[in-house]
Length: 554
Image (cartoon, rainbow, N blue to C red):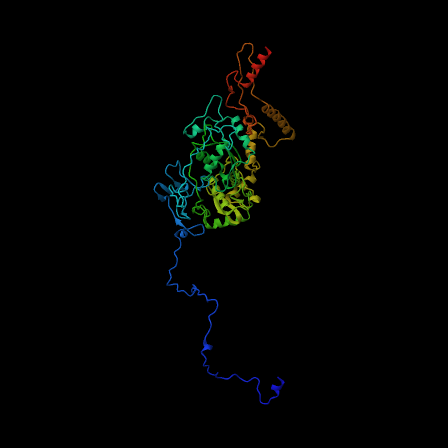
């Protein structure tokens, strides 16, 4: 490189000639084939022309409305859909389904249906039951042949033998008095129930279930259609079905009891709060029970009229706005917990209306649908006018046509507690302040005073200006008479020598002794029935033992 650099006029970085020399040899233009062939891909979908290729048609089943679609169809009273004898009706009980041969119209919920008629539906009208006939789809195999083995069927009238393996316990019919036997065949509800149960029989049936978790839970949907079959499955193993109610249905427990007895055919023999004990009947047979089709899914709830009106009935727009503003500072009378038992809620609201025209109930943590259903029930049962559901609270007004239940002892509202006083209430308050004989009390205290006066445990003093000595004398006099009345019982006089009198009928016993504890502790205490012999003389096991002992002693 040193020698090349020393040569004169030598450019090491000379440019490439502009025109290459012609190539006469044809071998230079030949290109060998690659060892792996180049794959030929189909043209991408982006390059395709969408007009030339038709779009695939979607399945028509996917076009049906579902829960997330905004489907709404106004409806009127009457038949909205029918398929032969299978019809869907809109009536007083809301949406009901009528099937051929059914004893009554089926509903999703029998106890929680509002009295207001629906104005629309959220899904197309269709039956939630299985179709009457469904062809078997082809699976590539012929249907199985009928099994030759006969499976024994057991019921209440034909129980399995004792000690048989692989068979669950089946409860026999009963209880029956001595010498009575069950009746078989199709019977009416009165025939299935049989004779009314005595008190000791009710205690015998209820006591084993008091601390048992085998029960039917009844929640916000109330008594649903599929619970009919569930209760009959409980009755197959036991004579009494325990039903525990919580939440919205407990506001009106009388309605729940009525629906349970009507639809199931049983009888409620004991009730404590939200717990019911449903007796199946003396002559109940599981095999001849009424069988109903099951609902395969929960139908969408229909659309009902609004509960809260901008201008409620009996008020103007300004009055309604003023009541809603006053209701924000009003203290609630109670607080409803989730899944609670609200048996006394209607009575509490009625008592609160005696002192205030507005009442508020606090519902923290409850679902909006739950406290709206509670408000709808209070509107019908109290009755009252609903004003708002703001801040998870139910605000109610007692209405123009409200009348006090304590006409003899009118109650006056206290402004410091209610913060509300109408013009009429103010006049009443002024009158009561001027009158010294008027005493402000609540309805519960008045009922307790009435009961005490009727049972001779209290006395009303007509004279108020009494000296301490005179008052002490009246107290001592009343104390002696009250003790004499409390410790007085019906006298039983034994017959004398002449035998003229057998009994002396005194006055009836006081009310406090007529109440019998409902704890089923005394199994043989029947007030309305005399003691009946269990059987003929000498038929008890004890009599047989006595005979054997006498034979040995001889």
